Image (tube, rainbow, N blue to C red; front, side, top):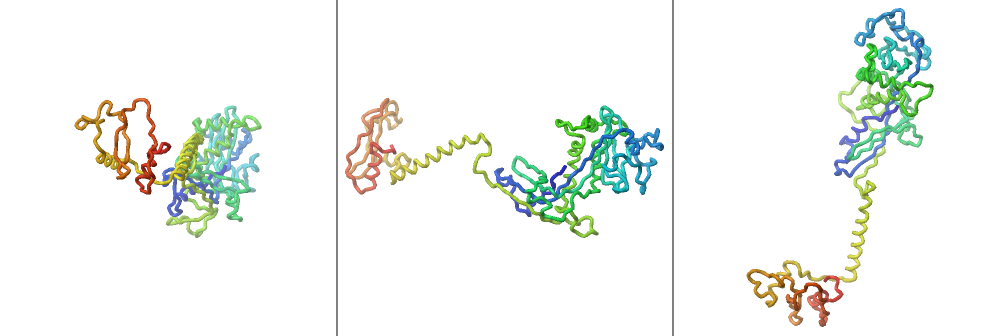
Length: 423
C-alpha cells in the first residue's frame, strides 16, 4: 500500500512558494498540486500455517523452551535463543518470506503459540528490516504476517486544498502520469527496504497491544485482526483480509516517517553528516493549478440563480433600448430641492384653505396636483386639479405647446406627453 509524501502539505504552505491559500481569498480560492516525489509504501505478507510448521520458530515448542513461561516485559532477554551468526531453523515458508542465509534474513522467533483471538509479535533480530505478527483465529488456525516498508518510484503525490478541507493522496502505476517519480529520476531503484522503519513500526505495534497475546491479553485490536483471517482458500470480497487491515493500520507510520524528509530517494548531502544543523530547502517537479475566484455555482441547487441573472440581463437590455430611442435628459421634479423650489414659486391654492397651521387633512390629501408651465415666462408651478380622485384616474390631455428650442419647454413637452414612459 502506497501513501503520499506528507511533506507536500508543508511545502504548499511555505511562504517561499508564494501560493495563495483558500483563506486568503475569502474562501473562494482553491488549488491542486501534483508533485513528482517518491512515495513510502508498506508491504504486508501473510501466510496460513499449521502448528507443526511453526514449531521451528516458536520458542515454547523448542526443547529448551518446553515449560518456560514468557512475559511481555522480559521477552526475549534472558532466553536461550541462538544469536548471530546462526541463521536459526528453516521453515516451509523460507522462500516465501525470504528467510535463511540465501536471502540474508533470519526468521523470527515467537515466544509462544497464541490462543484464539490473540496475537504475538517479533520485533527484534540482527539487522532486522521487518516486524512479524502471529495471529490465531477463532477456529485455532494460525497466520504469520511480515510488515516492511520501502519507497516506490511509480507514484506521484496529489494535494487538493479548499476552505472546506484538503485531500492528500498517492497516484500510482499510471503510465500516462508524466509526474511519476521515476520520470524525474530514471535511475531510481525501486523497492529498497528501509531498515529504520522497523524501529518505528515496533513502537506502533506495541501501542496497539498487538503483542499482548504473550500473556493471553485478548486485546481488542488483536481480536478484530484475528476475525479477518480468511477461513477458506479464497478472500471474502465483502471483508478486508488481515494483511489489508495491517497495511491500513500501519499507514500512519509512513506519513509520520515522510514528514520533513527529502523529496528525493537518496541523501544528497555529505555522507558523514547524518542530520542537518539547519533545515535546507529542496526543489521538486510539480504541476500547480489554482482557482482564485468562482464565476458560477458550485452546487446543483444554485442553478436557480440563473433565472435572476437572466431577468437582470433582460432589464439592462430594455433600459439600453429605451435610452437609445428616448435619448436626452429630463428634470426629476420629485427630488426634494426641485419640489421645494416649485412649492415656493407656485401661487396659493383654494384647495388647501385652512391647512396653513395644521397641515392638509381629509379630502385635501387625495387632491390631484399637476406641474404646469407658463409658456411666456417659461416658469413651472404646481396647481391642483378639478377635484379629488378616488377610484378612476383621469388621463392628462395633450397640450398644444409651440415647440421651442428652449430646454425648459422641451423638458415639459416630454413629461406632459400622453405616451411618455416617464409618467
